[in-house]
Amino acid sequence: MTVSAARSASLPAFDLATAQDVFALRRIGQSAAKALGMDPQDQVRIATALSELGRDRLGCDGLTVAFTLPTGPEPVLAVVFEWDGGTKAAPDLEPASRLLNRVRHESGGARERIVAEHPLPTGWADTPDARLGVREALRRHAPMTLADDLRAQTRDLIATLEETRAQREELRRLNDELEETNRGVLALYTELSQELEETNSGVVALHAELEEKSKRLRETSEAKTRFWTNISHELRTPVSAVVALSRLLLASGSAPLTEEQRRQISLIDTSGQTLFSLVNDLLDMAKAEAGQLEVVSAPVDLRALVGQLGAVLRSTWPPGDVVLLTPAPGTLPVTLTDEVLLTRVLRNLLSNALKFTEKGEVRLEFAVDPAASGPWMTFTVTDTGVGIPETELPRVFEEFYQVRGPLQRVHRGTGLGLPYARALTELLGGTLQLSSTPGVGTRVEVRLPHRPGPASAPPPAPTDPEADA
Image 1 (cartoon, rainbow, N blue to C red):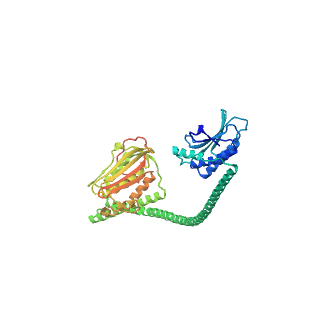
Image 2: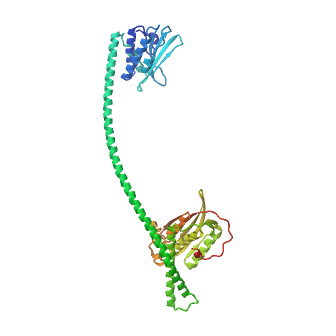
């Protein structure tokens, strides 16, 4: 094998004329791959592929082989076989194609070519010193005999077998570790499955217990509602009679009473009215919880409703240090809602505010909010009363609960006003929110759907809305 001077500027090129040249090409290719930093397997692949291509083309006129490192986006080792056209059959590229990345046959020019390419390692740096090392590796191989080539191939085969055996042992070790891991996973899965079954059993038992308690709570609630209803109906008639009789005794046309008798009958009348209010609240709460209160929507003139409610409350609470302020009639529209339920909500809130305000004002405000989901109307009741401590706020909507304070002894109530007002508000499709600051006052906001109704005539003279309740 002789080096071609015309191609020695890049990497050496060789002439292939004898079998010994093909033997030498195998060793040259392996040395070039090693100098380029390829692993032993790639070294054997390149040596074997070049040997197969050399044997296939041996005997062609002017056969040469050149090693190049072309520049491009992908660094590769390119080995080019060239020969003059002749009568020899087309090259068999299949054996080399199985070993190298790309192998192609080019014809049509003055000389035919086979280009075999294989990618370089990622750590390869294309520098002049590196190319010089590859060039020296290509030059230092002496011609080889067939026996030398066979011995070299045998050594390569033994090295490959040793590497294969080491890989097999590593694979066996990995399989053993995987089996051990699988056994651990299976044991963990079994343990978790048992724990999950036990947990599910506990959840089922807990669910059954909760169902039983829920059933008892429903039965208790139904019994409480029936009790309230029965007691309210039973007490309403005698209480009404007591109130009516006491008022007859206090009427101007009745028999004259002494001052002490009038005072005692007045106490009977006041106590009777308080008891009558308690009975009515209990009955209404029972109806609300039993779902017997039905919403009857109709056009409601808020001017008349607010005017009548304000007149009644002002007559009930004599003039003093507290002023009741209501919206101007011109700002109140006609809306579709249940007039009776809305009146009860506002009356409860305003009465509550007046009861616990010693001086200042109780104000009722109205606004319409054109929200995206539809218009809403908001009634806001604010007062300058004693306020509610923050610790008491979570409990103000509990039935029969009353905030402790000095005014509670003066104005005794049932503790049903706020719960009842919120229940009716939710029945009307709205919400009720309360905020308060001790010593500053309380603010209650009732937000309800607003469905505008037809315009109405000016409101009539205020009357007593108690008849609607």
